[in-house]
Each structure stands twice: as structure tokens, then as C-alpha cells.
Amino acid sequence: MMGVDGFGWLVAGVIVAGLVRGFSGFGTAMIYLPIAGQVLSPVAAITTLIVIDLIGPLPNVPRALREAVLPDVARLGIGLVLGLPVGVAVLLAVAPEVFRYAVSGATLVMLGLLLAGWRYAGPLRAPLVLATGGASGLLGGAAGLAGPPVILVYMASPLRPAAIRANILLFLLVTDIAMLGLYALWDVFDRSVAMAGLVLAVPYLLANVAGAAMFRPEAERTYRRIAYAIIAGSALLGLPLWD
Image (cartoon, rainbow, N blue to C red):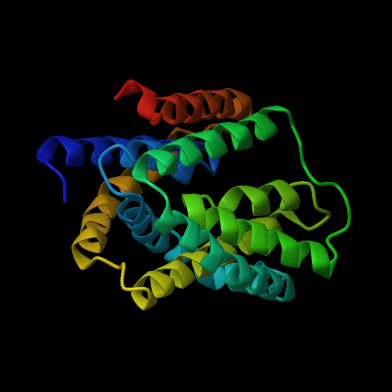
């Protein structure tokens, strides 16, 4: 699947992604995928990400089920089911170089929106929630970045912060399960790649714990600036221009 050097890049990618996720609460896909896209095929890169992301939040699921607005999660899931197959079809049709450009480009666009402070501030009506799930499914299937549309819409919503976190956690968990199922259905699921994801999950979780231990509430803005800089660097590094 890859050489020793390639696997070393993946380990470095998950460690950096775990540290940033630990002290900022986001950024795993935006950091890991531009790096993984350099040594893995698009489907393999996303498969390892899915396995890593699937294991990490499992201990928090019971609490999330209590705190989430489950009807909203269901609407997001319906939108996901509509958008995800289209996104995966696009992913399977494009060349690896196109995938790398798409991931890096989408990452930089989302980072730009975060830096600009853009958030949706209107009411979360059912059609909007469905459309957000569809956009996340399309972007997640095509580029492995399902989180940003949901995050950008929910971060400024009137919901309690605990409910926002719970909704996002459950939706991304559903996304990971749906993508694995779709990969299996379309016969593109590779068990050896999934096993590599399980191995990578160990340094990712350790780095996540270390990043959370490093976090200090009074320095939140500094941590976010560091996270933004690392995400930007990863996105630029992932461009095929440097090959």
C-alpha cells in the first residue's frame, strides 16, 4: 500500500492532527487529508481517516445522545444520505491529483471562512438542516471534509454549546458509518487500509489527549491561531505543485 517513509508521513500527520484537535476541538480532516493524499489513493486516504475518526468519539456517544437535538441529527442524516453517494461517485471518478487539489482548496476555503468569522446566524429550520446535511454529504464523499458545513451553520445557532457539540459529534459518527457502508457496497473498501487506520488511531488518540492537556482556557485565541497556521501549512503542503 505504501513504503515505510509513506507510513511515517501518515503517523506524523495523525500526531499533528491529534494535537490540534485536542487543543482546538477541530481540524483533523483539514490537517490529515492533505498529507495522506500524498502517499495514499483518495479512497485509501479517506478510509484511514474514517477509521481514525470513528474510534475517537465512541466514549462520548452516550453523553451526546442525551444532549443532542435528535430530530436535527435525523434531518442532517437524511440530507447526508442524499448527498453522500453523489460525492463518493465524484471521488471515484477523479484522478488522485484532482483529489489533492480539491482537498487543499476546500481546506483553504473553509479556513478562510473561519478566519473571517463567518457563521450562519439565522433560524435552523428543517429545510436548512436537510440542505446542510446534503452539502456535508457531498463534500464528505468527494473530499472527506463532511464537518465544515455543519460546523459553520451550527456554531452561531441559538442551541446550547453542549447540544451543538453533541449534534456535530453524532452527525460525523453517522457520516463515518455511512461512508464505510457505501465503500463496502461499491466494493472499494480495503481491509488492509482499514487496519492501517486502526494502527494510526493509537498515536492519534495519544496526541489528542496530549493536546487536550496542553489547552489552557485563557490562551484559547493563541491555540486557535496555531491551529489555523498548521491547517494552512498542511493544505499548502498537500498541493501537487511540490511533487
